Amino acid sequence: MKGNGDSGEVIVVGSGVIGLTTAVVLAGQGRRVRVWTREPAGETTSAVAGALWWPYRIEPQERVGAWSLTSLRVHEELAARPEETGVRLVPGVHAGVLLDGLGPWARQVADLRQLPADEVPAGHGSALAARLPLVDMPVHLAWLRARLEAAGGAVETREVRSPAEAAAEAPVVVNCTGLGARELVPDPEVTAVRGQLVLVENPGITSWFTAADEASSATTYFFPQPGRLILGGTADEGHGASAPDRVPDPATAAAIVERCARIRPEIADARVLGHRVGLRPVRSKGVRLERDGEAPAAGTQLIHNYGHGGAGVTVAWGCAYAVASLLG
Image 1: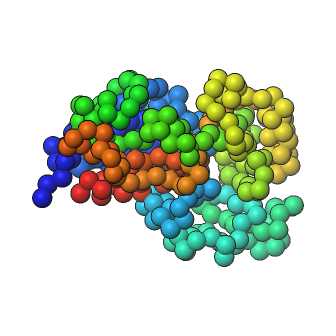
Image 2 (image 1 turned 90 degrees about the vertical axis):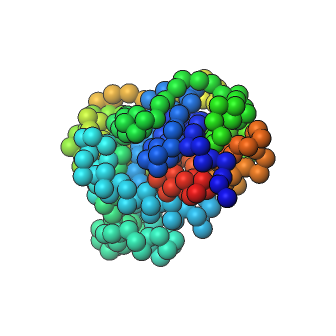
Image 3 (image 1 turned 60 degrees about the horizontal axis):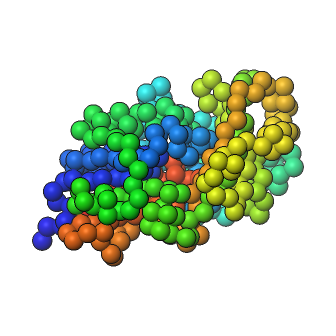
């Protein structure tokens, strides 16, 4: 028996890394895909992400491992063309992390190793070394869009107030709206976790570093990207999507620079290039990736793919292929 999506027409709502990656995978399977987006990809939360591959603060654990590894394999291939795709394999250190405390997925990450005590950064009891995908998000989002368009897909600027609007034009709708799902579905489990970053001139740092205390809203990390060094960060819960929540706080920025300079002192004197704030779409019940039992219109399918928090780039390809499998 054929499914409702066999006409091949799909509307993906949302143009962040989740939406565009999903659209690329579906278009690659021969489907006619349109992405409807309220804002250009360059203005989404994805555009201001760090963005290091690592399954950080994302649930459900029983599904995240497989999604992450699928994405890792794709990123490893894309890293062969970094100028085109924005993906590079970069060495670095996760401070305060024990290999034994990670899920089974960690055993399939090449070169992931526990550092001996004499190599652990000062102030931390443990650390892991790894060579992982680091993604220049503006470049990567532009590459995804170009790949989608090359496959016959299109991106259209259009605000969607309900899934039924999209279902009126295509038999399959994939909801990748991130924070927007709170109102679109509606799903009150979706909340914004505010992340602030500082962009500085790179004083010669070639490796990344992270130290995240899951009990604290303050994190410490720096990621070397072409033309800049990204410093972070914060994970402030309880925020909305209003304009004030998107305004960088000078005191927070100064604290970020100070924390990063404790690890690499040369950061203290690096010239500031700019500030960024992103609102991560966190869902208290974990990522929602499933077919909705209530179709928005007769003969249509609605598939949800949202709630990835700050780990969108880590699971994007795995989740995209999971969506494709739901369509058969």
